[in-house]
Image (tube, rainbow, N blue to C red; front, side):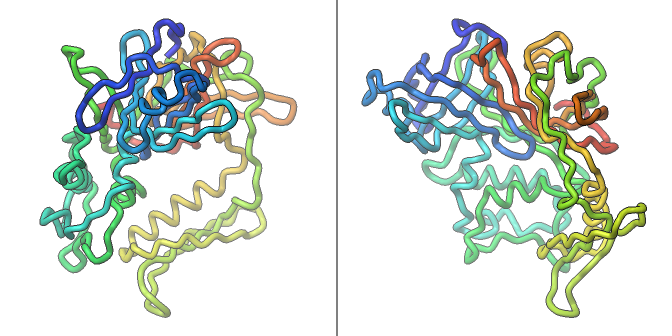
Amino acid sequence: MSGAVSDRRILTQHVLTGEWLTHNLPLQGLEYGPELNGPGALTGTLTPRLAPQTIRLVDPGTTCIYVEEAGELTWGGLVWDTRPKGNVLEVEAASWSSYLHRRHDLHGQLNGRGPYTNADRTKVMRDIWAYAQSVLDGNLGVIVDSTTSGSLIGTPADPYKLNAWETPNLGDKFDELADGDATPDYTCTTEWNTARTAVVKRVRIGWPRLGARRTDISFATGVNVLDDPEIIMSGDEYAQVVIASGQGDGSAKRRQTSAVRDGRLRLEHVLDLPDIKANDVLAARAARERTRRQRIGTIAEVVVRDHPAAPLGSWQVGDDIYVRIHNAWTSYTGWCRITGWTTRPDAPGGPQATVRLVPADSYQYGGTT
């Protein structure tokens, strides 16, 4: 990620034919990166030079775009939006799972793959991709990990269904399978194959989750953290009483409450989960939300420079990293989980990354598949 401009190339390719459109797109103001349980994004701009030919190289909805650093692909995705703004053309792209949000189940039950009873969520995730890529002109060539998990969905009394008349959005369903307690994680990756003749587009699935606790790298003020990150102290978001509201109507509506007394004024939050009917799941979600909302003083993101304390590219999506922030107003030290980042390789003063963080709980890590 910290390679010189001469070591970096932006490549574009027709998504269906595989034709290489360019091996050196002159994209400026490049910013890109991955995301936990999401596609991640890329943005940049093009100048008017050779505008008609250049626009053809980033045709939205049918063009793959890749970032290559020092001969290695570090990001890949689909161009979704290009628009002129003054003298530049703004380009926006998102990685592979973004495609599913433009697709729906038109056959029902993923064309016979469902309904699902006591099914591993990772199987349903793979079936969604298999269905999406089985339809004419719908094959991106994405490979989904064969990871299995202990997270099940659907019961004999209430199978997990995708009904054709509801035209379920495949992206929403895919993301829902990775949202909640004891569910798998995913992220999108891109790399050359061993022979360096083709691009490997992959959805990595982690169980029990992606990432590891990193004791070899850290983020710290005065070392590799630039500026003063915002430390959020919000009473609006605080609650020590969370009511999880589930499936049902009226007096039959499922509800579970997680509450503690902590010496602070009682503040409540209602978590609306209309698709959940199991009381144990509702109780777990309520407890998780309460724990999250009881934190006062969190860091949503830090801007870091390339530094031996944590070289750009040394961490992965899902990693825990120790963060030390000290400024005129407060001091913060603690473990934070990386949920994504965007790299600006041409930032003034050298490459930088904006890293998104959430407080790290006592996660069980399963390695980095």
